[in-house]
Amino acid sequence: MKFNNGTNRNQLPLFASSINDAIAQDNQIRLINLFVESLKLTDFGFTFDFV
Image (cartoon, rainbow, N blue to C red; front, side):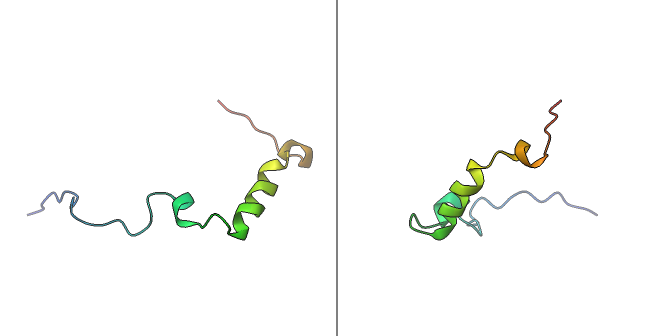
């Protein structure tokens, strides 16, 4: 017989609630993220078609 198992509400999450909380404010990845966010992907030939 199969049983439906629910989520254990007492279990702690494996990762932080958001990746932003897990990365220190002075981490180099934040500089890389700023650079990537400043790029205009359409200048490199990417197109975005949202339906």
